[in-house]
Length: 433
Image (tube, one colour):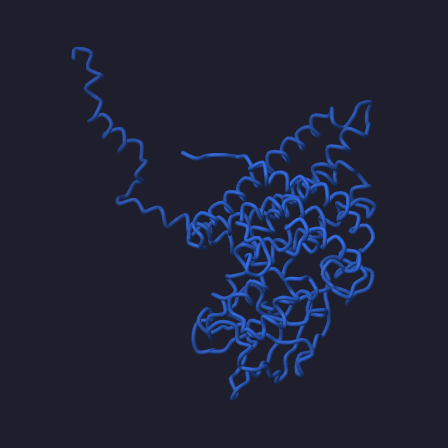
């Protein structure tokens, strides 16, 4: 029987180095480059600051570890990737410095699996090298979380696809070299059989970014990185279809499953950072004649936060372990992915709020990072599907392991069960036996 909660010494040494490197070299970037797109925009001044850090990561053979060796990565499993992302989640810039930033990491996997040789040469290698950015465009303004309401279509016209419709919250569209766009190619069948993914190059006629939204308030509206896009008779070559026609959601699954685990482990990093701030503040601030850390309500907040973070972290690592074990996104794996996705915003909301509350007015100010963490929480309850959808997935999967009671009363009905038990052991009640 094999059962362990330890990391092998060699990889633990790598994690220790990543932790130090993130704290000393990457986290300071958050204090200097504060624009919405700075960690991902190749033309941002932040890109020049990250360049030498990226080279150090590559020398350490820790670059783009989610990608296989044939493409220049290390081919790590989800447990290793999860442990790395737990540390990188402390900084907005962490994933970009290590070549595993979303949505580029997932888009690279799609191109690696389904792209033509020409597309791989033009886009995949520069994307893996961190020299360009990409966009994954799926959601639509009127559809919310329901793909069945998608109306952005692509119609085949000779050797081209003609795209018409709108897309919403297309992250990084404004500085991306290409977009992977989910379109309806057959409206006469259910959406999961009639949607496809096409590659649209930057500057393609007929593609217009109407505006860019940001998560949370920024000084200037329209300075965000989430594009509202309109396609009007936008023509792309037929070869830009990735995967088979009508298999868009199957293609998308290549990028979504592992990405959700990485989002969750990065959330663990945020949670631990909030916990660090909470504990330091509790040991530093005095009120009513004693330290906050000596107040029972404060101790309760710290204890609850510690327990929640540990439970959540272990659940995420268990999910990563399942993916590594099964090598596929089967029903069991999908259930756990949905469960951790649903748990993410709630645990963040509770822990970050406790940390903010213990800091008083300072906690809600822009002078410490907690308000920035707080602003990101609603996004994590929506991206990659809303929390409610994932809870439904979990419930339906769990219920498959159960059956309805065969009679009027449940199988655990005490009088019925007692009668059966008496038949088996009742004779021991007779003292004469």
